[in-house]
Image (cartoon, rainbow, N blue to C red; front, top):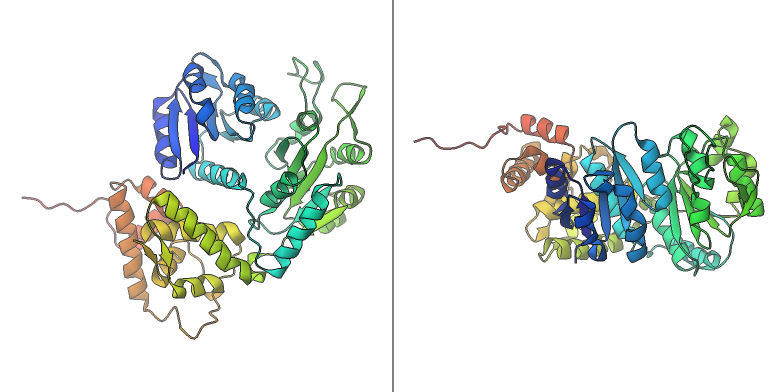
Length: 440
């Protein structure tokens, strides 16, 4: 069953644009006012929320939505110059925000990432991942900080959620340290009192307070401003903090899990990260190896994604052995995220069988260098001539354009490639910008 996404946006053009982009992957409803939105809260897994609505402030619906569904993913859409409003929404429980004009691909990626992470299902067939799960289970019930490291796309957040799920703690609150303006980080983390700074018109709770009894996940911890790091260290050491603008000491029972794809030891040498904070966060370090170093997980991940895509696309999907061997041979600089991206595109353009030729074609669309491939089987997957490969690629693009009614933006989304990349490939393959029609 598809996850249900509610779009709360009074601009008809924008709401229909969001719906068109999302409805292939989600069940989408549109509400153009707060009054309409309330009717869908019981059934929504995620909300795309504009803050300026005809019958009130969009922020006002956030507490009610979270009360109805504590795991709901709320993404706030904010106009330029109103970042402080988005920060306030996150303080109330929104997951993230995007500025207008919204990057549709980024929105879809964020939705998929969160809604899939809610399942907290980790594939662990390789010895290294089995060991990591055993470690995660052992540390889950302790109060100690955990530092999760690894390349982009290896699954750091889903491991954090797995640890939290097995901890029997309260809420799971997240903060992407790279997405918040530096000057607002302290306020968002620890809260502020009225008059603490220009624009602070009332007292506000911080995420440390919101996460009371639960877990605060600090993603991209390497981006945390240097000026805030001593305050986080103090909280880790003493479980106490001060609200910005107040002299009163507050206490909170919050477990910290942090994640980064940066080499924090190198950041320490550069002077951008405190050594004492690093050692405190790394009380229990877990490093997730890249996907290329745990081949045993690739086949299991392929099978997991195949079942998911078969259900979403409502068609029986199978993957031939040649396609699996080809997928096993890639290096995956984007790790699990890249593998799933390739499979999603292949499932869209394939009929019922995902073949090696289909995989090669979608890889070509993503401009992945063939030199990255080091085939371990005797079959030479690149023995086809360039002309044959381009012919297959041309067929895929034409099929996507036809299915989208020759709407190139929609076709690019279906193929999961950048719009400019599609135009570039169309030009190279001699595909006209408009469908050819017969004249009589």
